[in-house]
Image (tube, rainbow, N blue to C red; front, side):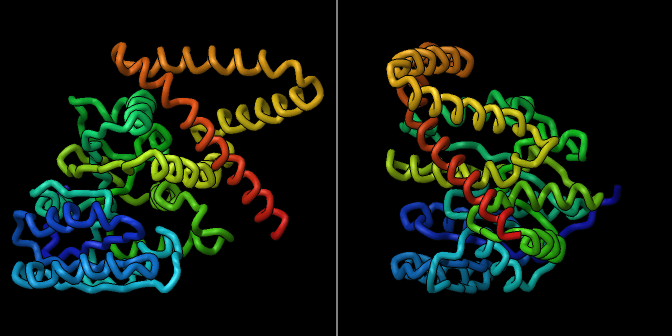
Length: 339
């Protein structure tokens, strides 16, 4: 396949509460080693004057580098899906790089993206920045186990197809994609969703594109740092928010975690019913939960430190994410009844 270079790329940055992370994200754009013409579209997903001031303060440096800056601000929070779609519609160039404030691009990211124009979509490798958070460490351990191919030091690039889609890590922080294709995929999803904030848009967009037979490339050369949320409150809120998005995609039969989701539903319903009918069984339920956490910690841990970290953090993770999953199920049932 002959390579064609992208001479113009639009970077779409959606941000909501990431004021503390924005400087590193914006600096990574300024530090790109490339001759590719760039523009930056920042969509501020809510009425934050602080974020607008931070972004605006970078305009002189961006202008000096020849990067045109466009800022669009929503008066109320619309959700990442709507923010990204708005940014794509405002973009002037045919190729997009989609990021958020948690992403810091490697210095050669744009140059790498410009050389991969033969692919409709390029999925990057997100390298998680070091974090002292116990929760972030356990989540990373879980993702490493689930998506070994995407977290191996010897990772090799490959084309994503319908056959290997479910086994592919689908994080879209730094997604490289044709602008019109991205908008088309988003619009096809909007037609069938009633709650866009609870939509697992990154996975559904990629699934739609793969089903259309477009080329999707998981690339070892396109790398970006991912910085997890900082602080227990922020992390728990993030895990809770991911619950509905998890349900939104994996409630569909044939998806990788569909059986696990239904298992969670059955076990949770049975446990609640059991404790209501037989309150004295609560101690047995807690004992079984403790055994489950010990087994899960043993499976995830890479060393003894990880084992103890997992034991401490996993109850919070399970409670936050589980509550989010229950919320997602309620949203799913409500949307079905509305139809």
